[in-house]
Amino acid sequence: MSGFFGVASKSDCVSDLFYGTDYHSHLGTKRGGMCMLNSAGYTRFIHNIENSQFRSKFEDDISKMHGTRGIGIISDYEDQPLIIRSHLGIYSIVTVGVTQNADELAKEAFGKRSIHFSEMTGGQINPTELTAALISQEASFADGIAHAQDAIEGSCSILLLTEEGIYAARDKLGRTPVVTGRKDGACAVTLETCAFPNLGYQIERYLGPGEIVKLTAETIEQLRPGRRKMQICAFLWVYYGFPASCYEQINVEAVRYRCGAALAANDDLEVDLVAGIPDSGTAHAIGYADAAAVPYHRPFVKYTPTWPRSFMPQDQETRDLVGRMKLIPIREIIKGKRLLFCEDSIVRGTQLRGTIQRLYDFGAREVHMRPACPPLVYNCKFLNFSRSRSQLDLAARRAIEQIEGQTDVDLAQYADPDSKKHRAMVENIRKALNLTTLRYQKLADLVAAIGLPKEKLCTYCWDGACPQ
Ligand code: SF4
Image (cartoon, rainbow, N blue to C red; front, side, top):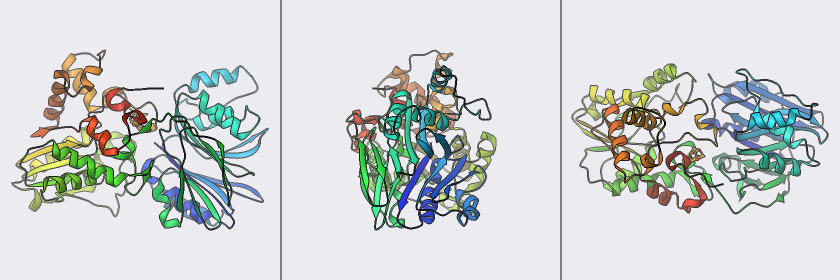
């Protein structure tokens, strides 16, 4: 996934842009970028952030950037922001989402012959460049954004930095949030609302799906109303999102406590302590421990001074090594204990297996696992979450293949928590992870913990539901 931030101010706003963008660093691992506009034109920097943090990469650039308007991105895939010269004028663009039909859209564009795209390493078109090409086909920025959003299959939230102001658009089904904020002399737009409090912004509005607004230092003008139909990513609350953020006015940390409480309500297990795998399992575990009246302890502590991030680097072997190095087990807390761990989710399960083994190595008597969401059966098609993964990277899909002896399987029966096949899949994962017990969150409980109607949530990666 990726995250963006934009600000329009009466005074120089590079500091707000820098920190506002940085507050999205948990969402992306590949590229960071910022673009500012002043009377001399656009100034842009893009850096590789695979091996070091956004802040350290951009520290030297800050002194070279000045302006009263800017956009920034933490990107999980392509280089951004791009600066585009078009018949609409020069503008800068950042996007969040996935364009599933990029090849078809590019082919269509090639029919007009006068267009071409730069090629990314790996033979892909930069999807942000493709979005810009769609925008530039229309007579105005607002029409262009609406055209791009209609044409793109997947999801695409957009910020455009222009001479007229900052255009902000939420993807047409609202899979990612886009929120506007205001303070004296400035307006801002963000994906993560946790970017606002320390910069002094008050939330002004949560944009609706497909809504387009234009920000200046003093005004936030609606150019296209939001649609009623929404499919916001439920995984934001479970895992992606930062605890201090709210989406649709619902706080992430509070949802995680409710997820943990729901897991506890379905359990009758006796354990000595509840713990979370740091960091994303922590809030779920606190919710469980509170509801079950079992002590919350920390059998693992995370060595945060040098391992602050969870996803990097990109290759699996090194990521496993990093995963191991940053979690330090405490024998005194683990030895002889019955431990119940809450996790946000089980994705591949490869790192988790090693983590569980270490608990036994340090003397754990029992290790129970309670993921805060159901098994991930389908790969995400709408955000960057699983772009580099094959379906069989998912622990649930590996289990299904082992049970069925093939990959061409009706997955719906495995997604049904009351089916025999589902139980067999969970048992297969439990054995593979060497857990004493494994019990997943039910989708209905997760939906209740979030508090929005199911039809307003994307739950595709758990149940394959894909209403358009
Ligand atoms: S498929 Fe899963 S991760 Fe992707 S948008 Fe839907 S809920 Fe979110």
